[in-house]
Image 1 (cartoon, rainbow, N blue to C red):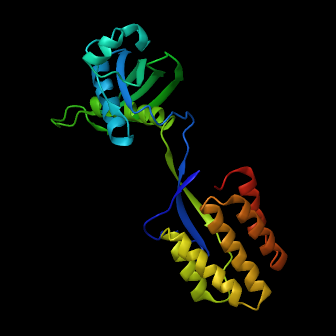
Image 2: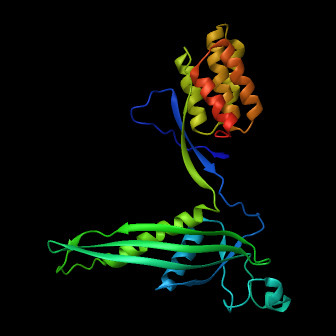
Image 3: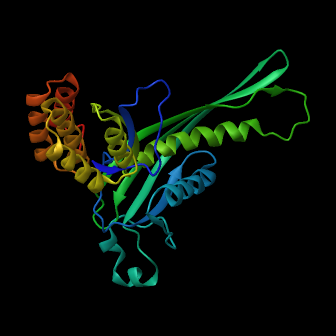
Length: 281
């Protein structure tokens, strides 16, 4: 997993000072080649799907690096080779195509003069390679939403029906987008504090700010200048964490083993298990 470190120090309420929080980028379930950069939204069948397609185009533009383009005719065959080279020159040909259908249920709830809408948006969407017709993603994505409750006979301008419908669609579309784009994930890491609190806090803050190379230097200096084996063991574990965040898995494992020789700890062994399971990269 590629690591994205926070630009600010995050403080967890109720957690001890030996913990820090990082933000990771989790690889998508469907890995797409980097050269596929454009998407065309073709036919999505169902009720009021023009607004749905517009919402999908907006989500793609805001949450991904893909460029949404439109062809002059969305009824052509998927295989771009059958479209011919002249068609390719006439208008941009997308790398990927999205097709599907929408099934949506809307329930109007009325109780004691108050109204609320409950919506379920069930989208079946396919992501298709335009040049070959290969379906790289095909699944159902479900979103639900409840509108605000309002007085049935009020003159409010709030459109609870539309609000609930669009919210449910956005939930389903976010699930679809998450299948082929990296997602951010919070992860909490427990460190083993040094006796020298100032040095430990300095290193922890450097890690939090993403300054891993500087943190690595500070930890290495502490290990070289330290005569206490217990303190060295704690520092070796911190060094292991930094190496794992840099992607140096083998070095991280070796440092954890050194740490455990000098300072046996469940924390270091637990982190080693996470590395071996692939949970920390």
